[in-house]
Amino acid sequence: MKLRCLLVDDEPLAHKVIQNYVNRLHTLEVIGNCFNAVEAINFLYEHEVDLMFLDIHMPELNGLEMLKTLPSPPRVIVTTAYSEFALESYEFGIVDYLLKPIAFPRFLKAVNRVIEQTPNTSASQDTTPQTSPNNNKPAQKNDEYLFLKENQITHKVFLNDILFIQAYGNYLKFFTEQKMIMVAETMKNIAAKLPEDQFMRVHKSYIVSLAKIDQIEGNQIRLKDEVVPVGNKYRLLFEQRFKK
Image (cartoon, rainbow, N blue to C red; front, top):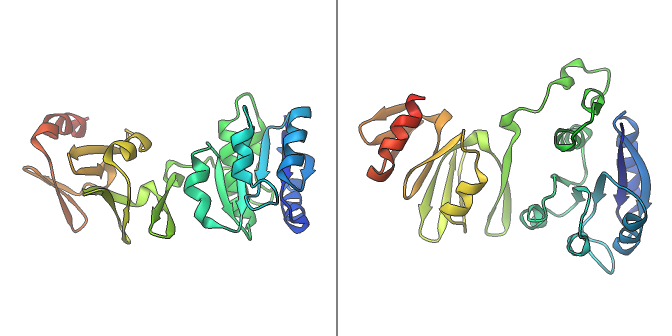
């Protein structure tokens, strides 16, 4: 079973790039090319589409405005030259956000995400070029990530790189093995986005990555060169969880 794809972009060159990538895979087929959002809306009402490659900057109606009008949109992979819309795009439940120029390996990774979310399909075995047997490995959990907006910069942060998260007033500090990123967010909201089997709240101001814990001593957790306290309210649950 092939996934039926719609390409929506006002640039003909962008259509050629995505069309070329789709042609290299046995799991996808392009059933439509639209060069503006209105044309795409009409196409979606008349055809069944499994996956839409959607540009954001288009005349009359941009890609995100178009998504707001659709009662039941297909799965969407955003293809754009602008990184600043990443966070807003994920509020629409998009599968992935690709920045132009799009490399084929990155395109392939996004398609594999769609395959994983598509029930009753055996296409996943064919989503990689035949010349590279190692590419048939399924996506791993360490591929999961968040987009975090710090001032005017949007960072892509892999969950596997996060050591811990600290509440800091109306902000959160994300400590990774490489850097610290501060974003306007709440502990409650971010906790809901993190997988429970990988992260745990151990203090009113701290969430830690369980896999990154190096040492526990008393009410303190050491992660690399950082030390995080365990709150009394969370201590019993943490001890039970850690023993498991």
